[in-house]
Length: 351
Image (cartoon, rainbow, N blue to C red; front, side, top):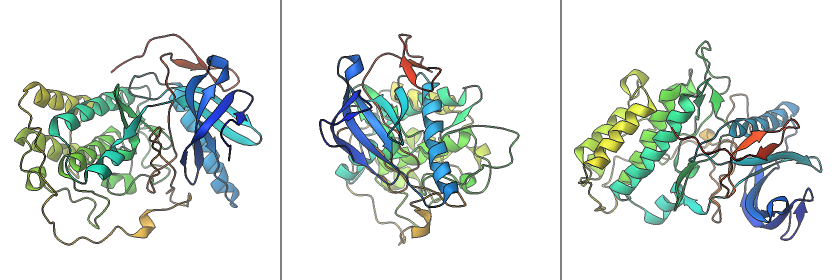
């Protein structure tokens, strides 16, 4: 572990450790090459006795770097550099001066204001549409509160460790992976597609608007009507949530753009309630999720755990997959021939 003022690879001066988990450490640092720009350096620390598990962790880290370097959207963190130093792998990424949605929910212990949550949801739907229309489409596979960073500039979708390109010819995912409570049924047994991300976003918004934590239940696919838990919600908002969280993918929104349009329509009506009710009414007794759903190392089914960052306030989630984080900048990047990512000056592309 690097101490403050340590220098990584002769370039990144460590300010402090901002996140730590089973697969990586996250450091706030100054980039000496770019006039001391503030960045986050992610150090892969995963170490497994099983060579296959170790290679899986390395592959996920490599894939995240390559995938992020290929994307350019204002709601996705930028990668500036990918390198190896002293036998370990590193990423330098955009620093996000904010906090993740999971922290906000923990602080509130109940529903958040409807208008604010819808605005965040519209931005996440925007970036999901961008990913889904990518060629080939990218399925994020891990939308949840701890992967939505919130700052004064809007939201950032973080943690691309288990995102993958969608191959319609495949009958199923190589690994069953995701976060219990937010992942849709098909993510455990079949092929995920863009509609899987729509379900996860719907459950995330339902959590934020009702205060009901889907991970604190042994019925993860039971999503109660939102207005039963928060009567102050508009009927149109409740209907949007119900459609997004249908168990059958064919009954959900068929694209993130379609869901985004509905959210924008609700916002444009301009009569959203900003009142917040207290704790949600008691639900039928629900036991905790089985500990087996929360694996700390990759296994034969692909389940794994890793840290999430909340910039200056790191939030390490036990149900997350490979970590992702970020560093403040306005330039986009393109992969260099040596595998690093060199900053460029092209503008962000927005969906």
